[in-house]
Image (cartoon, rainbow over all chains, first blue to last red; front, side, top):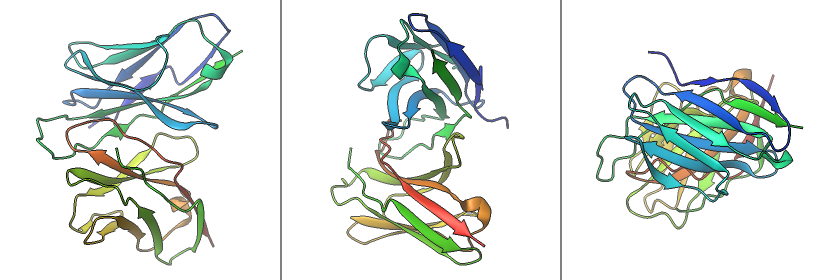
Length: 117
Length: 110
């Protein structure tokens, strides 16, 4: 079974531009989460989507948004890019079965490395 | 979500067991302990998880204390390819939000 794929793998943008990153989850996985990783802040949760609805959100400004499509593929968008948005953006997917307390393992993609100049 | 505390770095000789500790003293009854590792800016790789029983898979073993306030990840025979940052995460069941700490940088040497 193919793993989580993210496109593009590398991206260079300039301040003020906007960017869209794409994530294709593992087949059958219904939840997609996004994380930002920077040297200063480490790995931080951005948001989670399940059944095309945002289910959880981290502490990021409104410039960061996302969506999920009916096939569970997800995109995240960052508008008005700032230098501090330079980071590795990671996507993770899980089955997200109704659990009532059972954990669901998330599997991460390779990430998209964004450089803002 | 419960906070975890891990040593910043550890060394291990190749072929020996690597024992990575994690403290999670504020863990709640429905929170799972997850371990991931990240090899040089690749996506984090899932290793193992558990609730209260010890767990073992092809990669590692997870030992959780009876009071669930701490756990240890054991890599039974460390190789150079196990050099990575290891993250211990406590996660509420039924959510997909992972709160990563700073992790332990494990260096396996020949």
